[in-house]
Image 1 (tube, one colour):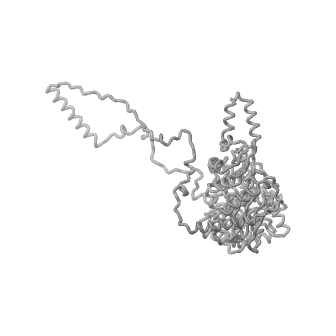
Image 2: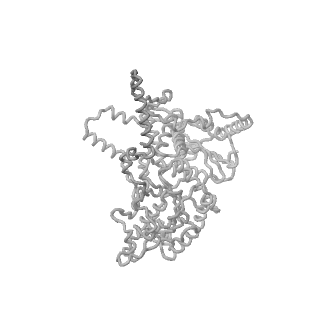
Image 3: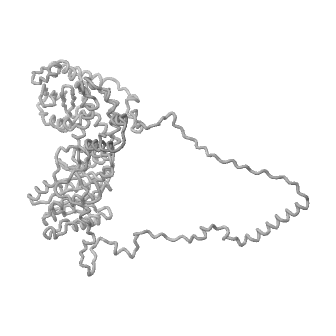
Length: 630
C-alpha cells in the first residue's frame, strides 16, 4: 500500500497530494529534491530516506514531478507501472491547463488515483503469481557491448584482419659445380701425401693452440669484469653523512642547521590569502587565437574549417531541428557515444552511465522549439548536469574555520587519509605552507608509524618550511613543529597527544598525517576509523590521484563505508572533502574529478599541480566541464 503520492511542479507548486498515513513525509520529499533533482542525479529513479523509499517520474514537457513514497521494508513491484499510468492519464485529462501553466486550478483526481492504483495492484499480483521466465541473452548484461568494441578505428575491418605473412627473400647463391678432372695415379699419390702431412701438422699444433690468432682485436683489449660503482650509491663509510635523523654539529660554521635545507623562496612563490583557481583558457580566447593564427598563416580552405566544426559527439544531432518531442529512441545512439566520450576522459564507467541516464530522464518528453537543435539542447543539459555535480553543496572555507577555532581557543584539526603513494605527505606540506603564508602556526602529527621514512620525510618538510619562514620573521615563534613518537605506535594515541600539545602551546592548526592503506585492508581501515572517532577532527580530507578511473569509485565508496561501519557511533564522521593530486599530469583526462564528486557529494577542496609548495590550486568548475565537453 502506498503511503504518499504527490504531483508538484518544478517550481514547487503542489497540484495534488494523497497521504495514507499520519506520518509526515515533508523531510523525505525535501531530501529527494535537494539530493537528487537539484543535484542532477535524475538517472537514479529511487531514493531512500529514513526508512522510506521514494520513487519519482519527471514530466519534462510540463515541468512536473510525480512522487510516490512507501515503507522501505516493502517490495512493491507495481509502483513503476502506477507512475507511468497516472502520468499519462493526468496529462491527457488536464493537457490544456498544463500547457497554459494554470497550476492554481483545482485538480480533482481522487477517482482517477483510486482506479489506477487498484488496477496497478492487481497487475502486481498477477505478475507475482506468474511463473518466472529466464532472461534471454539480449536482456543480460553480458550482451551489452564493451567499450573496446565501441571504439572505431580507421581502417579496422574485422573480416579482413589477417596476419600478414612476411616473406624473407633470400638471394640465390649459385654453388659452383665441381670440376671433374681426371688425375693420373702419380698425381693421386702426391695429393694423398700432402693431405696426410697437413693432418699431422694440425695434430702437433693442437697441444699449443694459438689463442692470439683466434681472439678478435676487441676481445684482446677487453679486461676482466669489474664491479660497478653506482653514482651517489653510498658506502658504509658514508653512513654518518647520510643520516639526517639527528641534527649534526657543523663545527665552527656560523650557519644554523636549517641553512643546509634553505630553498630559494623566489622559485617557490607565495600563497597568501585564498588559493587561486587553476589556470584555464576559455573557448572564446581559443577562437580568437585561432583567428589570429589564420590571419598570420596562409589561406585556410573553408571546407577544412567546416569539417572541424562538424566533428564531435554532438554532430549526430545536427539534422534534427524543429518542433519535435525528444524520445528515448532519438537519444539512444548519441547517449552511447556520449558515454564512450566520458569514459575516454577518465570518468568511471558506472558514473558515465548514470550521467547519461540523468540526461535522458531530463530530456525525455521535452519539446524542442522551431529553431532549437537537439545538439545544443543535449550539450546544454549535460553541461548543466556536470556543473551542478562539481559545484559543492557547501563551501569548505578553511581560513574562516581556523579563525573561528582561534576565537574558541582550540586548535583546528585536519586529518588526511588515502591509499598508498597518492601524495598525502607532500600535499599536507603544501597546505601547511599555505597556512603559514597566512600567519598560522601549524603542528604536524606524524601518525604514519608504519612506512619506513615517513617521519623523516615530514621532518625534512618541517625544516624546509621553517627555513622559508624563520622565527625571526614571526616574532621568534617557530611556525611549523613536528610531533612524532617513532614507529610502531598507536596512531590514534599520537594524534590525541599532538592535539593536547597544540592546545597547551597555543598552536592554531594540527595536521594529522596517516599511513596509506588499501580500501580492502580491514585492520587498517578499523585503525583509521578509530583515529577519527577518538580525535574528532574538524576536517577529514581524502587524498586521491587524478590518474585513476574506475578505481576512484571503489576507493571512495569503501573508505566512506569503513568510516561509517567501524566508528560505532550514531553519526559517524565520513569524508568531508577531496584533495586531487597529480593534476598536472593528466592533460584533458579530468574525469576523476567527476567520479569522486559524484560518489561522495563532497567538494574537491584542493588540486595539486606540481612539485613545489606553491603548486596548490582550487578546482575551476567551468574549466573542467569545458575540457570534458571537448
